[in-house]
Structures are given as C-alpha cells and as structure tokens.
Length: 185
Length: 101
Image 1 (cartoon, each protein chain N blue to C red):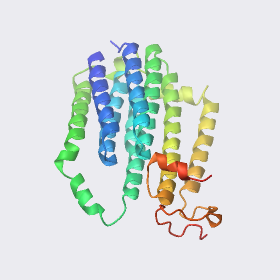
Image 2 (cartoon, helix red, strand yellow):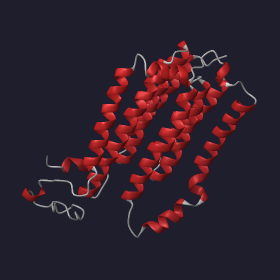
Image 3 (cartoon, one colour):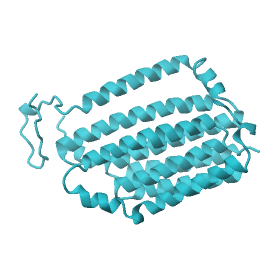
Image 4 (cartoon, each protein chain N blue to C red):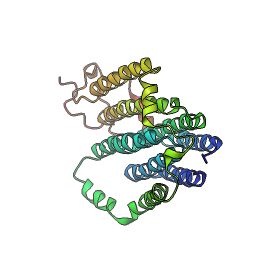
C-alpha cells in the first residue's frame, strides 16, 4: 500500500506541475484531471474509499467540466475551428493519457491482486462517514447548505447577461472590448 | 499495512506549495482558479491522512465540507471571470485594476 501511495502521489505531483505550467488552459485541464485521478488513488490507499469516489465524481467530473465550459465560452468565435483541430492531435493528449493509464493500471493492480481496501486497519467506510456527518456535524452540514445557496445565488447574479451597472455615469473606456447590450436593461 | 501518515502530510504540503506557486506565477484567472482548487485538494488530503491515521471518519467528513467549499468557489470564481471577460475583453488578473469601483 505504501508503494502504491508513493507511486500515485508522484504521478499526482508530476501532473499538477504540468497543469500549472501549460500555456493553453485546455492542456492544463487535461493534466489536472490526471492529477485528480491520481489523488483519488492515494485516498484509496489511505483507506478513504468514499472520499476517493467523491474525488472522481465531484472534482474530476463536475468542477473540471465547469472549468472546461468556461474556457470554451471564453474562446467563442469563428476562429476556434483550427484550434479545436489542433487540440485533437495526439501530441496534446498523449501526455495526460499516459499519466491516467498509469493511474488506472495501478488501481487495477490494487483491486485485482493487491490488498482490498476493506481489510486495512485504516479503512473507514461510507457508513461510518455518514453516521459522523449526520450526527455530530449536523450543524456544519446546515452551514454548508447555506454556503451552497449563497454560491448559487451569487453565481446566478454575476453570470447574468444584462448585469446592472452604473455604466451610464461613466465614459466608455477606449481599450474596452465590445460591450454589447450592457447597461440597456 | 497502512501508509505512514507523514507521507500523506508531505504530499499535501508539496501539492499545496505547487498550487500556491501557480497562484503567484500565473496571471490568467482561469489558472488562478485551477491553482486554488489544487490547494483546497491538498488541504483535503491532509484531513484524510489524519482520519486514516486514527481510523476515524472525521477526516472524510471534513473532506466533504472542503468539497462543498471548492465547488462554491469554482462557481463564483468562474462567474466573476466571465463578467470580467465581458467587460474588459481579457482574463488577465492585472486588468481588474481598471474596474473603477
């Protein structure tokens, strides 16, 4: 288990280093997915199987896809077709793919021939976690639900197309991008 | 045989420093959000390592809360980036000084 942890941790560090140094945001996100999957394997080796599953689903699934959506929205325009074609070339995705395949091989080894997580001394299953979360931490769960509500309202407010501005009292900046329909509503 | 907790803490520290360096060296706001996610992840790894050391469920409970905070932070941060891009036409973090209140 310790060797598996060191292997997955090293892969995670390598992928994270690549993720923050890429110039293109999409390449960085591909490496970030690799880093998050490797980190999920480290959670598994630590006996936290529930957190490992959540890491894959929420981080690598939801949050990275959200980031990808925003990157794609920011790149909107007619000039993106060559860029999209360039993103499909093997040179771009072969690095992240190698990292993810290594992580998958390691996880497959752990699941097939290695020690199952349920037999570790440090194993904490979903049942124990949920008993803890909905027992002593109930107040924190309520606080987190308020946080999520505030996040939803804030994101909705900030993401509106016709964001209320005081632009009528200001002169438009010369260097500003085309602000379509702003201040109309 | 379980993993020694010091390995987990060292990995969390390394990932946190990488995320901090990403915040400091990148001016693209999308990369800032990515780096903050990495740092929150490192914090979650530290909690899970602690929970694994004592075979307690509290570490994973704290990871759940960190997960919710990270999701909220990503949503709000990305909405702010979209708003900045709509106004300034760029996602450069330094361009936000031209906000005029």
